[in-house]
Amino acid sequence: MDERKIRVVVAKPGLDGHDRGAKVVARALRDAGMEVIYTGLRQTPEQIVETVLQEDADAVGISILSGAHTFYFNKIIDMLKEKDASDVIVFGGGVIPDADIPGLLEAGAGAVFGPGTPTPECVEWLEKAVAEKRSKE
Amino acid sequence: MDKLIDKALAGDTRAIARIISLIENGDPVSDAVMRRIYPLTGRAVVIGITGSPGAGKSTLTDKVIESFRKQGKTVGIIAIDPSSPFSGGAILADRIRMQRHTGDDGVYIRSMGTRGSLGGLSRGTREAVLLLDACGKDVIVIETVGVGQSEVDIIKLADTVCVVLVPGMGDDIQIMKAGIMEIADVFAINKADKPGVDRVAAEVRLMLDLVKNRPWTPPVHLTIAENGDGVDEFAESILKHHDFIKNSPEGAKVEYRRLSSEVEDILLKNLSRRTEKIWKNHMSEELMKELAARETNPYLVAADILKKIFPHG
Image (cartoon, rainbow over all chains, first blue to last red; front, side, top):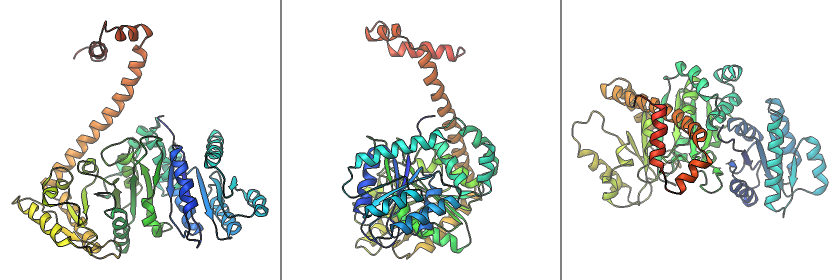
């Protein structure tokens, strides 16, 4: 086999219209050699999950600044389960209060990165998470 | 593997997506998959959409999908964006313009990075198209990476090649040049609400007029992809061209040329894989030293190896 690239969907669910953070992360993942599928703004959970399936993504990164993170994380994780795709790694970031993070991890999120996280930290975490996921295939 | 193929043929999105990844990654099972699905191919209308970066290829593709969906046709899209020559990574963002179709069961969109391929396509595009064809998509649209003047590999895959131009990209000499301007079966002059569009259209038509009695004269459509103006007519021309290709001696020639390049590509791919292996086996510390000392040279070494592989020349 030549090389199996890491494919990541970076998605912006819901109504917040600010995607600077999502773009910074997308760019960092690109520079780490990953193929990043960017969905653009204002996506429904259905669109995001369907994109993950169509693109054969290893992971989906969700950026939320609107405060609706608990709803969207849960919804997307549940829908992936329904579609028999619970192996897809879900991670995210944005403006998410520390108090809400344990709940998201409990629900099945792999990691939540807050504002100011150095991008190499995300990259390193994701590389490890994907390697672990693939070792189970 | 057979199970995965069965699922894909039954229309399972994830199975289709997984097989495309395997092929794209050069997995050794690829050839076997292709042998299995190939008999089911040849039914889809395969369209290529090409043009410079920012010409509106993705937006036009989005509207073309809508047009075909209105006719009840299912559509598969392969959208190609460039891979980084440095990291090998890519931002695949063509589907932003098409996201409203995500969730429509009759539409499958797959983004691919070029991964070092230079002709406007990606590694594995051909196989991905065949797979979508076998899985029953009525229309397959290949959106090439944004191209310059000479990335014309799309003619090896598409029945109908659409070249998207925009006003303001240079004078009539650009339109006379060889390369991308020659491969169009249908032209779209997009952003037709911008100044200069009539001149571009006139120049393209003039260029086409220079050749008399051609079996197919590429129609020139003015489109504003942003709001859908002219897109239905553009899509109609695509189907007309497809009919022409399927029912004319000209079309048979195109088909033969394509099939021939297909066999050639598969041979090359396999040979290059083998060549790599043979060279690795042949290479030794000693030989490398001789080469470095100029006691022998790469041409002699290669000729020696070739003689062993093809003893009869």
